[in-house]
Amino acid sequence: MTSVPTPIPSRTQYVLDAIKHRILTGQLTPGQALVETELAAQFGVSKTPVREALKTLAGTGLVVMSQYKGVTVRMVDADMAREVYDVRMLLEPEALRRAVRRGASLDAARTALTRADDATDTAERSLANREFHRALYLPCGNPLLGRMLDEVRDQAALVSAVAWAASPSWEREAGEHREILRLALAGDADGAARALHAHIASFVERAFPQATDQVTDQAANQEGTA
Image 1 (cartoon, one colour):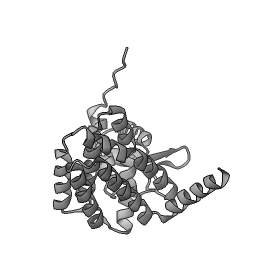
Image 2: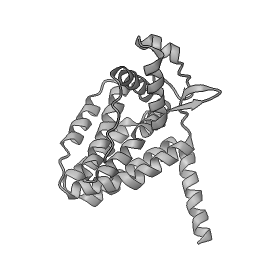
Image 3: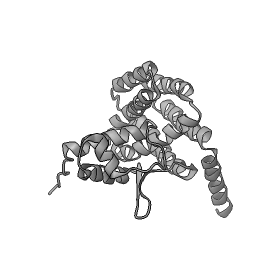
């Protein structure tokens, strides 16, 4: 018998969405403390929905709960970036390849790309870019693959938010997005997948070069022991 997920109470969902939005748009920065009483006062709710929202955010990897430090926004470093983007590079291009091969509609990706181009601030652009990537992998025909990518989606967005704050690069990424979508709409599944892989790899290389060095070193060590 299949279990049905327990729905999140509306107040908890409201707080969850609000805190997540603040984290992914840089209003709450990595390492910043999230105090239940302060958040409850800000949102006009009791501490219970705040506590439940923070537990959910900890499960998605956006916040860290510590017995000694309390709850803080997750720190972003080269190790985290490498782990998250490794998963994306392994799974996301294959999901797009499958979506193109099965002739899935990419209208949602086109709409998200237009929203990103028309965005008036970083927060709006970031959210549109997230929707663009999701619209590429979600119609892959394998719901489990889509859910796996959804699980790292928020963490990838946190990495992007930190990188953009240090060195905005959305104009270059927008051009890469347009090329990925062009190839996908032309039915070039392999070309679109390669372009998407290069897009994801180049971002983490620019933003976190230490992560790239670690991947290179690991590959060299594996070759030496083969």
